[in-house]
Image (cartoon, rainbow, N blue to C red; front, side, top):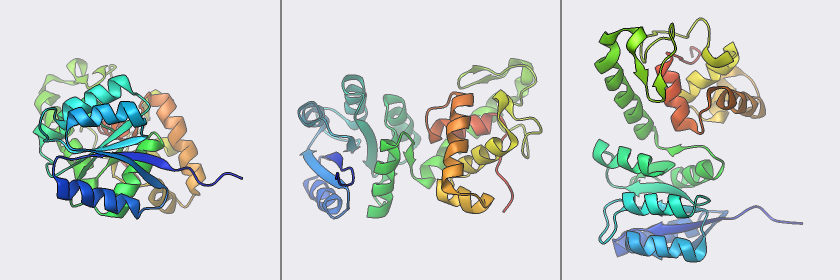
Length: 249
């Protein structure tokens, strides 16, 4: 009889006290094994090649090779290893380059052990491990881009994944749930998508809709397949572009 799966984690941070503190914290969390600790990006890349961890907790501002470049190299050479950024900085100049480099999670260093464990579990399951503040910043960024392009009219609007088909609302154009969900989504799938965009977890969505978490997961799998999004971060962007909001409280 096999025991519960263990997630193998590597920590990369150039500050010794911080790095050792994170390693100690992870050692107290069930289901997590720390397989290495790196003092810079170059060492992180080398240790990933040696230990093949499931997840790297990556600082951004490090000597020799920063966290963004290390993330890019790790994701290119070891696609089975996910990266969760754990940094002091949540500004656009740190956040968006890290996500573009392939990070699937982004937390600030005021995150507690429970939040770190949840982000690790999320990226291991194929979701995005983003803090609520980061999800909000993504929405604000999309909102700003929508306002900048909104004056061109629906026919000329271009979304993050290319031109929007004629008749679809531009980002931020809808004030409430869309009348006819795009891409063949059912009304319930659109509702679940809107709640994802609000930052709710599967359990919270299940409570809101009075259904089981398994039912929520089925809806999410279906809507991911229909919309072509790969994780919750892309789902948030998709929901915002199409004016999809969740159900009222």
